Image 1 (tube, rainbow, N blue to C red):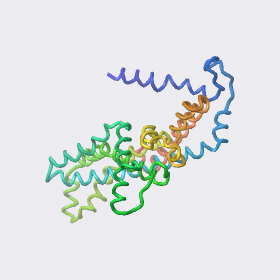
Image 2 (tube, rainbow, N blue to C red):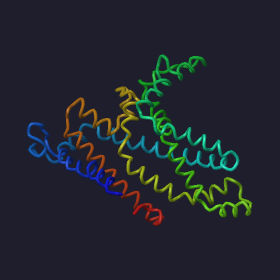
Image 3 (spheres, helix red, strand yellow):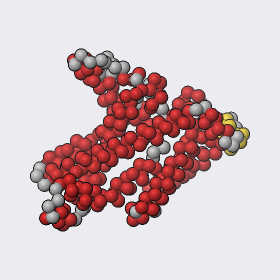
Image 4 (tube, helix red, strand yellow):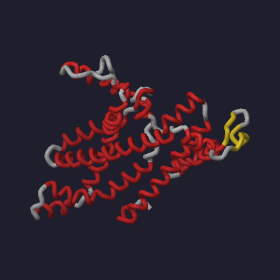
Length: 290
């Protein structure tokens, strides 16, 4: 039963790793991958000397860190609130879960049109609302300072429904006798959450954070490219490793530097996963991934 999944993993994840070689050569299509001249770390050196590496690295790590924290806090809060509704209005809980989970299936092409409906400088709902309140209107696609908040809101809206369901399932798996014992001892709701529910959810939270850290150097291309309309004015805050690699390929045709940026992305992400898991294992060995 596992063979199709293992085959897909081999074909799409492991076999393409041979392409790492391109990051260390002056790639010329007429010579082929292995016939191109070996340049060693020249592509990486050029990437860092250009100054782009530090900017795209900071943007990628900073934005993904915002997404991790905001998604974790929002998902936990919503799961706890839905758990309070479960015993009284079960149908309402199912309704809210469906509403929260629906955006998870939207592609970023659709999400970008939703964002445009709100943020369009001329016809956007936000500027219409600001105009009705006699407040200053903004050209959102030309002002990079707003976009860390905007992208965080969009990312949380799209992905939080999945994690709400995961945490709701984790809460349902908690032994009800633990909560009953806390109630008998006179613990208020916030104490039950702090002393019973959150400690029982700790392994699940750790797994989510570790998996998220593993992808902290791998930004969601659709979010940063489509939702921002690839506006060059927003690059100081929204240009990340994935969009930089794409632009290097489509605009400059520099396959070697694009591959070098991808290798840099994967290696540092791998190191961060090892480091995060090591820190977790030192503090709580039973919650570590390995």
